Amino acid sequence: MKVHVLLSPLNADELYFSEKTTVVIDVLRATSTAIVALNNGAREVIPVEKMEFAMRISGGQNLLGGERNLKKIEGFDLGNSPFEYTEEVVRGKSIIQFTTNGSKAVVRAKFSKNLFIASFLNLSAIAEKLTELGEDVQILCAGSNGMFSLEDTVCAGMLIKKLSEKNPEIQLSDSSQASVILADSFAADILKMLRESEHGKELIEAGFEEDLKLISEIDSVPVVPYFDSDSLKLETEEKGSGEEK
Ligand code: MLT
Image 1: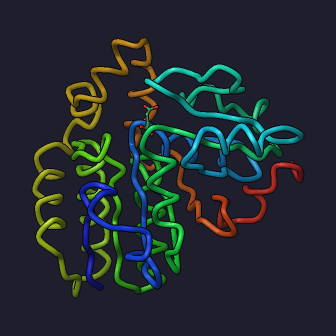
Image 2: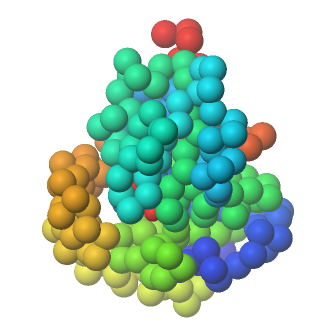
């Protein structure tokens, strides 16, 4: 198994991902929030890259969620804090997700043969799934406006470490090796790393400090969201179809 980390979505165009197995990471906060929403019974999360498109397909059983400058967008039902995506709110709903970096990164990787989302919340579950598939892996860090972001890269490094435990033959690209070094430096206190990251500081200033605590909890939401027919769903039927609850 070869593993490569894309440190920003700008490192590759859409066609790069065709026939590849990809994991998109946006720790703060898009993939963490989508993971929580699906675990709480959302039928699906539909990531979009344009706000106008999000508005156009909203209505009915859909909820519009996301952020601009970290805050809920006027006309949207929800912001981008995982705390908003409770079971009462999301059960059985399709959630259209528009965010500054994360939803766009998922859309960029949409031609992947297998596409998953990860964060600290579901690292081991994703590592297990990737091991089961046995394919080469691309880890796409959503980053920040095309730039590197510490928290996504540390998360990528921790995912690689878990994959290495299960796959002794693993081959790491240069960016994968660098991600592992960062993971080794920061893994001991993920919450501290989040607090000290650029994006973490902005979230604290905007009043979202509690989000960082929830998002730092490794393996607390052990689900495997995969992208299929334009939306993210859960692997297991009973979790994904909120209506059955
Ligand atoms: C993003 O996509 O840039 C993030 O999810 C922003 C955030 O809500 O913290």
